[in-house]
Image (cartoon, rainbow, N blue to C red; front, side, top):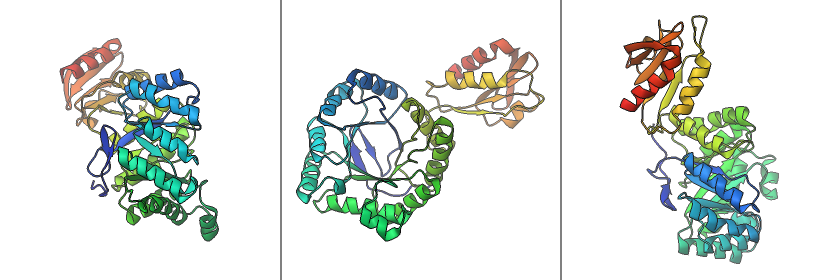
Length: 349
């Protein structure tokens, strides 16, 4: 698919926008007062492959999070700040890689200029984050509700405040908990500016519904070439957001540096615990970095044929199963050995 052309922006040790990879990010949900817990969770996210880590800076004391987390992980860090421009200045001084703040919410122009100036001098980009609950009163009155047009106007207004002071290392997010509104908003924003876009469905819900809504919203836009970084927002452990984000990219063929698992839904021909087996395979592949397609099929009759495009796979029988490669059967093995034998073949690839 053809990606939307955007400004390319340096972000810590990586880049966002332009021809850069689409980055998967998440946010710490440990209280900002718990530095040790925050560092531990940041390490967990980094180990899961998270490419950008954001955390809240609600007060001056929370600035103490920056150095310990920065020393613990080699991942760009984002300070999430609302209203108080002094926290943005403090975060910039202490080495943050990116700041999330809405310039229109921090007061007078001299405050906006102060944030723009320090970020420009230190090469720190700013993410403008607009959502349905944060619209300016006058914009809400103008449109009557948080329509896509209202959300985009708000985002571009905030961007204009930074542009006024010659700052344009800007990333924009325009989130809504309504999937249709979210999609339409980003499509309109993509036509209205060339800034990189941070995709997400806000307040998406718990794991099950949150992943469904995020997959529809984020996936629809990515399929059209829109989006430069994504966050799957879940009321759950942040690591699950990272896994879900990468899975969305894999499903669209936008991430090809790790295994892609396919498995059949089972039917009356299935004679092994395919559900349990597929889950075990998925877990064993979690740390694998090979760009391969792995199939877990329930039936020896159709499995190798239906999944012949897979690099390697298994097909269940009655107490046993087949190991196959590119549709060609390699050997029959006992059911209890299927998982281990599959992993041995994967190691050879």
